[in-house]
Image (cartoon, rainbow, N blue to C red; front, side):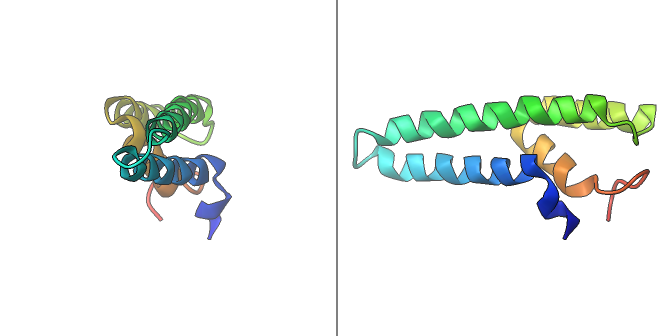
Length: 95
């Protein structure tokens, strides 16, 4: 379970839960929109953090780094979460 050691993955999943909670509460309560905004801010931080992790990863070759940069930038949140899930060991992309 080395995937659970990735802090960005855990925060990303938490941000997704916060967004879903904000969407559910938005129609019934006034503070639901603030919860939604908090989740969006968390997911924005995770997105920037995942781009930074791809840039500073020293165990990736140049073409692997370019692949992950394209994925994390073009698919903002899911690309970063995919990077945290699939990139686990040195010179291995998929488990």
